[in-house]
Length: 219
Image 1 (cartoon, one colour):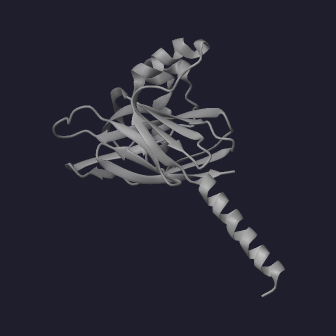
Image 2: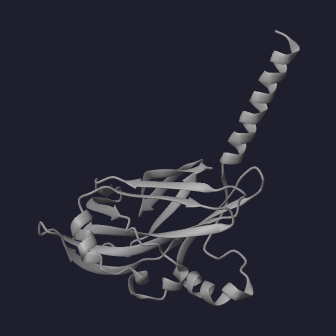
């Protein structure tokens, strides 16, 4: 093996390692308070602070962060689907802040399946992602500003749900998740959900049920 061949192999290995390191994120913090904000954003962020359930901060090899904020619920409203099934639903939102130097592609897919909660045997939940874009200005509104829900539910309650967005460097995006539970039996306290990242895989947690729901890709 000549010197040029060896050099090419070393360059390829080094480039691959660098790409892999930059595309991985490690969780360094989980908290319920917020990142530092500019004076301009303080008023809006007081509303955010009251609505957040959890916040995850992830860093890559360049010490740049990806932040995931998960909201508390709004709703607890009844809905009857076209087949006569009765549900209670709640509205949540998740905001992803990209503080890295790269664009990130967000891919989320929820199947049609309902999810049984391990600690609540016989209790099933299902999820839908409306196409509406959530903004922090909508936080004070009823259902976080999500409207015209019943026509959307009627059309999509028995369909898979997905989301695909590009988050540019130093920008953010937020989206809604609607969580349904079939009515029946006792009520089991307040519902909590959250999105988190493991490597490049995304997981959505409903109570103690964790669901692999998608991934991120560094562009």
